[in-house]
Image 1 (spheres, helix red, strand yellow):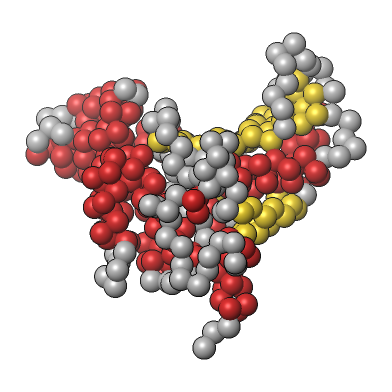
Image 2: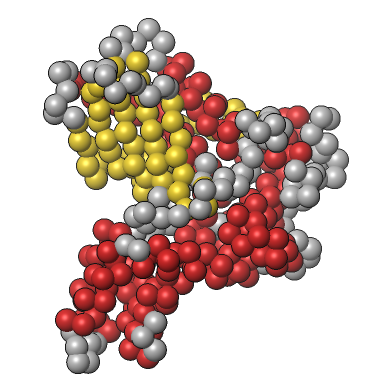
Length: 346
């Protein structure tokens, strides 16, 4: 029989939070921009290197309450305490340690801080961001500048679902600020832009509902990036804390997207002997698609896709449309990336 200490160790080794959190974040040089209007642009570069170049360690506790006084483990209607793992008796099972560069951890915090249409589902997001902030600012003790860093994750432009995390204090507008921005990449799965274009083409040709079909495809990709099916299925079949966190994440996101009815439907798919991550994802994606479609309708991507289709009339072939539409979608969709800005002030 597995010992209690070994079981707790296993919990710490396996992803405990949203499966998107457990992915390490890698910095990539898509672009790096320094504010050339700054008196000393080098300050921003130095600050950026400090935040991205040093390894940090954070430990956050699922038992810690957020600004509203709510902890994830206190939401007993959403968080199932595993048998034998009462939070007060086995505190280590609810403490999660993460390693990485300051920037990588800040992007993780942004993803945990995800908001859906103004609602922030996860109670432990506050504790994650506070832990990352403390780690980054701890690295900067003795620095000549004050450093403020902002990470933002948005799966597509002007999305109703996004997350932001900060470290430091935003400088007053009157201060001399040196700023560097970069695009960073997580290990979240990216979108298949060709698949989205194909969905648009086929629906537009058959029923004229191309945008709705494209939104459905995009919503499914977002949900699968948040809850990768294979890894999520593993946690749903666990009896340890990782199961409690995964089911908590599903329930809270379902509540934010579709209310109690969607939460109950999703709950049926993530509990019991027949828990099925793929079916749970399908339910979330179906509910999310309506919002994605509304966002796409309000964005120029709607006109771009429609114009691309019309330019190929009278009988646009699928391969032609996909080739022409993919560049627009590549610019619009960015599930696997986040934006990072680092500012330095004297």
